[in-house]
Image (cartoon, rainbow, N blue to C red; front, side):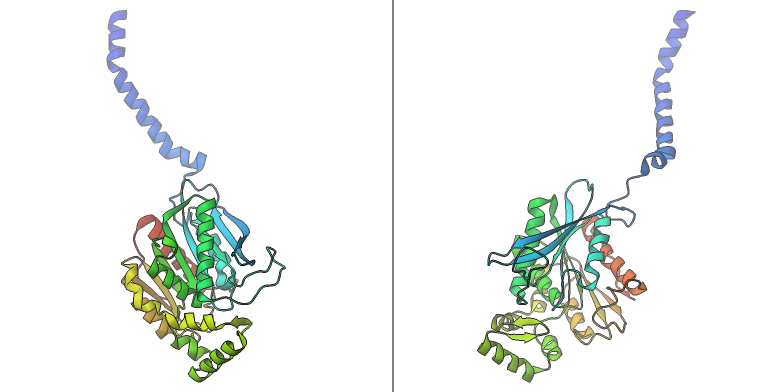
Amino acid sequence: MKKSFLHSLLHSFPYLLLFLFAGLLLLESAFLPELLGKIPERGSEAAGYVPVTETLFLERGDGTYTLAEAVYPKGYPGSMPLVAIGHGFTGNRNSGGAAELAARLASRGIASVRMDFDPYTRPAKDSPQTHAYTLSSMQADLLRGIGYMCGHHAIDTQNIGLYARSMGGRVAMTMANEQSGGYDYCALALVAPPRKRKSQIDYMGGQAAWEQMKETAAADGYILHQGLKLTPQWFAEFEAYDPCQHGDRFGDKPVLVIRNTLDYVVTPKTSLECAKAYKNSHVITVKTDNYHGYEMSYPDSALKEQLMTAITDHFAAAFFTQTEPADARL
């Protein structure tokens, strides 16, 4: 009797194990997410990483310093994708809602670095700034920020993107086209990007005014315009390179361009020309009286919410899913 019972128990043991295993799986699916909290998919809006901000001064090699802010997701598992953020002419690291955008990117598992292109004379926020920078120095600042992040944080160097506004967009296009710094940038997002000359010349008063400003800069070393010292180098660099002529070098990697039909600083036509320079570009067209700001600095704006979501979706798709959202008109 005992032998028969033991034989039956041993015979049924594998089935008991299978039954217990199935029960554990059922319990896990039913209760563990509630008890432990389900880990969200990286890149999704539900990821919910806590942004960590690091303020730093980067040496520029000429006795001046770049004030930068790195924002990254706390507790991110593994190497993080990175977005370098560039502001426009006369802007700063927080212009156009950049600080909020950085926090939103971090919450989805994406690190970022942004900076003031206007150099500081000392590594302190209250130190004087030089009020002088060029397109090449803007690029050097962005590369300096990327280099810092790669050297001090776990960054996935195969997943680095560029986001920039206005003149910063011109610099970002150049970097993407030329793989500046040796990085193979995988995504680009631009708000009101200009191209070579015409839009900037028109904004600064037309060709005659432009030529007069160049002459003054050549004679005096610089001309003060909107608080910035525009040097002969600034003018020369602006005239030397048209990023729209080299967009093919970026291949079929995703590009997002946002333009405003009421923007007269960088016209929607100019921004569309920039979009058309790239094989895989997506255009969002808006209409707002906040002509060059696009409401992205507003504390509460439905348009800002749509644009912030579109930008973070763009990078999340490029970094995590390799798919792109469809074109849109907001």
